[in-house]
Image (cartoon, rainbow, N blue to C red; front, top):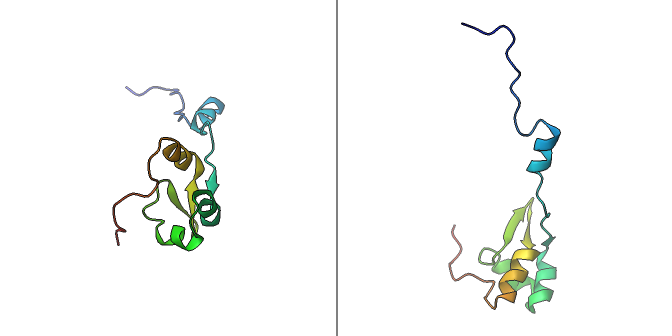
Length: 89
């Protein structure tokens, strides 16, 4: 049998508490290729040419940005921020 007054279906994103859970705790700090080049001691053209191989690279709109937190952690651990794999076309 069918219920007369079913409860409305709510999702996690519709209530105020659910909206709080969807927000990231820390927003990513993104830097551009010139800032990354200055940080690692390379030229901006080198960063642009190797953007597919750099850890933490993200395409934002028409440009590329780099996640400062990820890059800082990789450098602090003594690892290279450039991966060895080639650009995938």
